Length: 195
Length: 195
DNA sequence: AGGATAACTGAACATTCGTTCAGAAAAAAG
DNA sequence: CTTTTTTCTGAACGAATGTTCAGTTATCCT
Image (cartoon, rainbow over the protein chains, first blue to last red):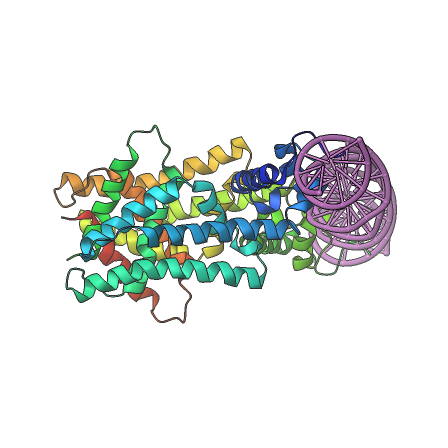
């Protein structure tokens, strides 16, 4: 056999990315073999190399794609003027967006150490940009006298860490709806940054 | 060659555990080979099997040992009666203890998926016990009317996630001392659970 | 229709993996 | 000093790893 019926790069490409994403998130980058990914797609391992130069590039591409999407989605959002309302927007956006892409988030936070130095720097810069988006909101609130924070940098990291915690336990269909979870977290964040 | 000069299980054993700990934290369980660990210790790979039946048991032992130590350390602590003071104790204890063992923490939170179902259940139960320790504090504060929380379970997870975030960025010798970091986090936690 | 191109197979490559084990040397026990 | 026990070596095992590539077949283009 050789080329298979119905095969097309527009189809196989995304399927490879989605299979790799799922497996990397499930078992970790190092624990997943190219043959496993290929099997999930229904293809031989060699065929993957029409779509990625090597395994690491596949990981990088997934991580970079995700980070750019997060940034773009936040920037595209309608934002209120008021700092408190803006922070609420961020909290709700972060939880909702990241919950819909828990695999991507998991990988972007867990597989950094499997990147080469250069690739790591690329991803790190994107993460920094996202953190800066939140810090800008916090600084704006401090200037307006709405927030009381000894250190906006630490507060930024603390809030993001807290919100990311949702992904480790929330499963849809559980005790609380996503909307309720958003509200509970927003309540805690709001109180933690105000007096 | 065979047995080497000065060799002793009381020495080699801990050195293997410490080498494995460091490497697992640095590169991830799946990415570290038994030969790498052996090399770090200065021994051949086969010698490791005098100390662990297999690679997975080594991981489990590291994780389980860590979790039991955290629990024991918290239980051994002198605890104030007042819920607010007790919560402060917990926050400061958690940050200080986990900061001194960032490798153990990293592994305990990242390598769960590399455990067999049975081993996973063991670690998960220990983690749950630690979370319960915090939730007990929060419930106590709610009962005493000192805390305002819509859901102590979520609050527990949110607080722990927030505190764990410290480990991802704090490096000693940085802008802030550990004591200052503790205070900043305690400030945010306190505000987030009170009215 | 047929020729060009894109997509994939299947086998092969050199490495590396976790693990086992007979035997050798050091340490401990007598 | 001699015997026993502990500790480690060094080689070996089959299996799995990432990656390459010549050849084959489907699809696209004219």
